[in-house]
Structures are given as C-alpha cells and as structure tokens.
Image 1 (cartoon, rainbow, N blue to C red):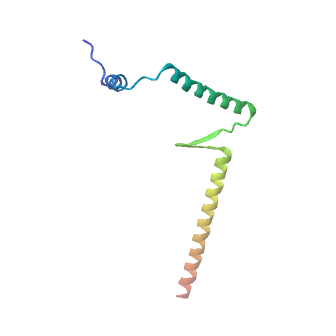
Image 2: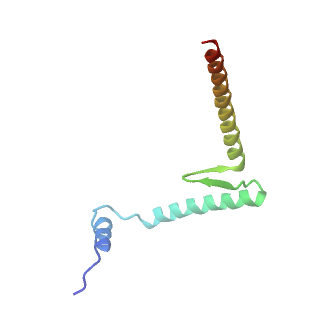
Image 3: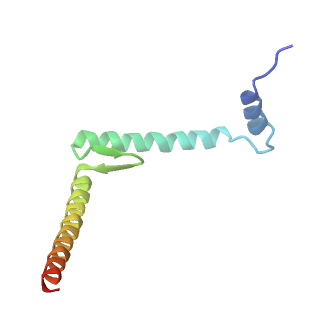
Length: 99
C-alpha cells in the first residue's frame, strides 16, 4: 500500500473535491491571451527605447526617474529637519547664556 504525502493529500482535497467547477478551456485561453498581449506590449516598449529599468527595493520598485524624485524629496525633508535642529540648538545656546 502506498501512502500519500500529507502535502499532496491537502492539495488534492482542496482542488479536486472543493465542488467548484474547473475553469473551461475558453476561460484559460482568454487568460493566456491577456498575458500574451501584456508581454507583447512590454516587448514593444523595449524595442522603441521607452523602457526604463526598475530599481527593486524590497516589495517596491522604482524607475530611475521615480527613484531620483524620491531621493530629492528625502534629501529636502532631511535638510529641513537638519536646519530646524540647528536653529533649536542655537536657541538653546542663547537661552543658556542669558540664564
């Protein structure tokens, strides 16, 4: 007697005894056609030179332009925080001298 692996058994129980209708051939062909059309569009974009590579950062990805914009915004916020801290430090030094 052959025992089935519990992982295979769980898969078959879920997919073959769920009572849901299996997708028909037409639905599968339609889905495949949509995927192929998207791939064709991606190839056309690359052929025309409009393709911009993406920079992957964990779950997010950025085009080079998007990455540069994000870094510029980050730098602007960081510089704003730095100038506020410098101003607070100067105010603290002035208050300390007058006390």
